Image 1 (cartoon, rainbow, N blue to C red):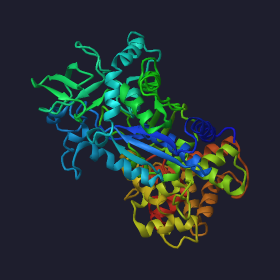
Image 2: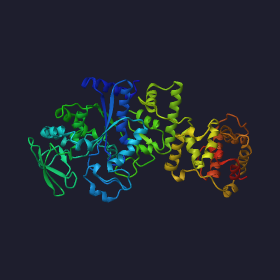
Image 3: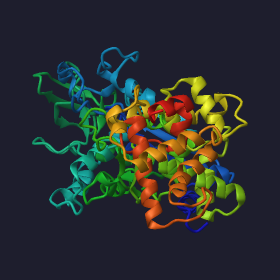
Length: 558
């Protein structure tokens, strides 16, 4: 199992937890900011520690996976597609911003948390959610906040080591936006003209964080601040709960508070001066804790949709992916690649190849020929320490299901009739679900209209009228053989066999000359043009079965 990255991290985490806090539950952590749609890049922030925590549980250890919802972060910008009037809320905590119009949720944060929570449940991810609004406003972090303010000179000195350093790694702007998951990578660090203060109050008048701390008394905890709205006041930090530590201090504070042993971070946290690097010193020198084992995770790309970017509308989310693929497949994509390897989630035709690969692996698992690392990734995809994920009872290839529902436009009787040609034992479509529904959603949502299959209503008289004798004969031979060969295998033999017969060969001959292959290609193109008006389409045996014998003969000219 050398190639299984999950097992290696589990080994490290168990050993480190035993060194730090023997006998206590092992803590793995993720952090997500519900500032907008939580996309497939952010999902890696959760799946990486989930897989490690799950492996630790499989080994019999007590392990908790905490997911911090950074819902006390400031609202930074109005996303595409939202009324520009929401700009008046910029600077407020996400839990104080109204949800988008028409939402059933009480605020912005809850609106964007909900679909992620549902997706994680479908994916079998167990976690303990921690809302940062609740943690700060309840006073849970009061001692940590007061400690950070007392140690502000130490924190400032640590930060100052990095403020003038150029970033060692330049990250593509869209990539950085896509990877912003845990907290705010670009948030200010608390520096100001009035001195350094790691605490940022939300204004009691306008509820925004456009505030400047002007003084602080360590003994009385009196904190004075002014706000861009014109408000100014002095509060006692020992009682004040409407504010938070700046991100570069907040994150290490939580590592110490929760005793986190494992937490990954995105590429936006990997450069000198980043939150993760600086946090390692702050957690040790200020909070008396230790930095988690924290691999950097790489970019998750998309094919078939615009590149993920929180600054644009339509970012693909886990719910989007789960609408076209089964949970085990999505888990597998994250389990089989090491965190520092980038990969793509496909919304285009590539999803069919991805499903083929998954089905091939499943067959190898069944016959015992899969490699150890592939066995491990498959096990992590299909099961957790406490559950087995549901799967489609009777598997047909995804590409077959997609072709059939495309041709039948989802007509259930037609769909069942054709799919029984692939598997005569199918009792009803329920045996093919949820894969069938995922394939249908993919066809109707992500396949461009010009690539959808539309069978001709009437024969193409112009094309038929211009055919030569060889082409006419090929159509006659096909039509004559339909009754005898009306099955998936039979039609496959017939379609490849017609050009063989025309070349003077037996239909079952295994000849494969360049001339014969060229004749078969030309024959297939002719059939596509006559049936669907394009030169390509679904596999011809599937297409013929869907169109039906009588209509096929009509469209072929008789």
